[in-house]
Structures are given as C-alpha cells and as structure tokens.
Image (cartoon, one colour):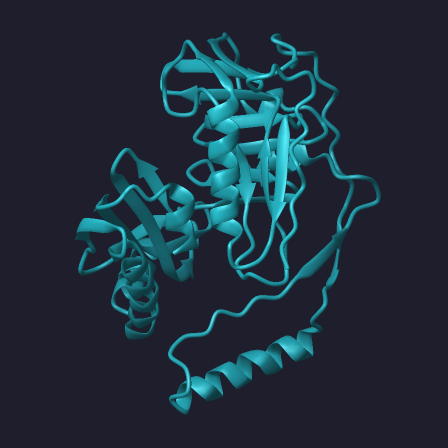
Length: 322
C-alpha cells in the first residue's frame, strides 16, 4: 500500500512556482547549511546543498520510483524556470531517498526552497517561490558530546549466528552471496547538529559523496547510477581490505585483494547484477574484465565502473529502479 503527501507550494503563481538560479559569491557549501533541514550531495567541495521545503512527496510500494518520477516531471512542467547559470545542477533540483524494498519503508523526494551549488568555477543559488534570495547568517555550529554506542535491534550473539548460518548455506550450495547488515544505536547527551556530522564526513572522506536527505546521512564512495545526457555510469564496489597507513604495506594488501579468489568472486556477482540491469536500457555497455583498486582514507575496495549509452529515454529513477 503506497501513500503520498501532496506538495505544499506556498504563494505559488497559477502556472506553478518560480524557480530562479543566479550566480553568487560564496565560500563553502556545507558551511552554508542551517541547523535544521539540511540536504546535501557534496564531493571534493563541489555539489549541491539545500534547505527549506518547497515541495515534498512520500511514496512506497513496488511503483515508488515511477510514481516519484511522474510527480517530479509534473512539478517541473508547471514550474516557471529562470536559469541564468545553465550548468548541471542549476534550475529545479530535488533530493531523494528510496527504500531498497517495496515494503516496508517509505521513500521521500524533497524539493528545497533554496539550493546552493558549485561545479568547477561556477557557484550559484537556486530559489523556489518566496524563498529569500540572499544567504543568511547561520547559527553557531554545535559540537556533540561523547556518544554511547549500544546494540540495535539484533544483539551481537544473534548477528554472529546469522553470519554462521549464511556461511553454512553458501558451503551447501544454497546461496552464492549474502549481504548482511545490522544496526548500532548511538546515544548523545544532547541533540546532534547534523552540520557537524556532514563536515566531519566531508573532511575525513573528501573523495566520497557526503549526503543528507530526510534523516539519511552518510558518505559513500559507491555511485549507484549517474546519467549525463545519454551516458550512464554505475560504480560497483565489492571486496574490501583495511589500510594500515604505510604505503608499502597498503600496496601489498591491494595486490592481495586483486588476487583473492573469494573477493573477486564476490565482486563478480555485484558487477553482473549491475550489468544485467543496465543492459535493459543501454547499448555499447562496457564492463571491464577486471576491477581496479579504489583507495580511501581507511580502506581499499575492488571497484568496477560500468558504463553505457542509453538506448531509450529512461530517466535516472527508472535506471535506479532496475
């Protein structure tokens, strides 16, 4: 059963809200976020941040991606757009968070009232409707106190049992690959300033995409899918080893990872899954025969960039749904 929340467009003109993008002078993206409602997609100091809610929809169920896509297309069709910047990311922008499975879980798309973007030498601000057209003075950043980490919904013993069962089923030939996850709960003495978390993530993992959407916050090196015109890219990561902080040791660990039958097989399953999904929409699909090493601050991953050319007009949400 799916549900939606109709968009709220305060003060919108009959034809829809006015969306205006103009160039601005601003240093830092995450540094401009207010304390509440932070939205972010930033890598190496570039990307998009936003705040305020011009429109919002919540969807669930098997058709969550297509429903969100139709809603977004309709919203953009009704908007009055004045884009003086003309680069990817200017004009109307939405931030979205989608559940992996149809049920349970709710997926959310948010159109912020204000977006600040940076791409190359271009910095711009996009406003929707009656949003202020000047950057405002921000509240002081709050540094959180010590965090008390606790078990989540699955105690450690249950988790270890699940790992053992997964290994046994693989050994019996019932499964090829299993991805297990568990939650850990952190309790802070006071409310956590999400801006502090985002800045720390961006500082510690500059080559990752630091994100914040509707309470989902993190930094990831893995890009599910990107569409630029008719070009499609998906970065697959599977197979990981820690870094030790010494170049020679890390290089040896990377070579061992590239030669690990277990990790290469694990990686192959993930690559084939992505290639099958993109093949339904793409021609000239390029799937490298072997992965490369992606080095991050604390770990090294086996990585493969799968690329292709769109054979149809599938929007990016349709690609993600595949």
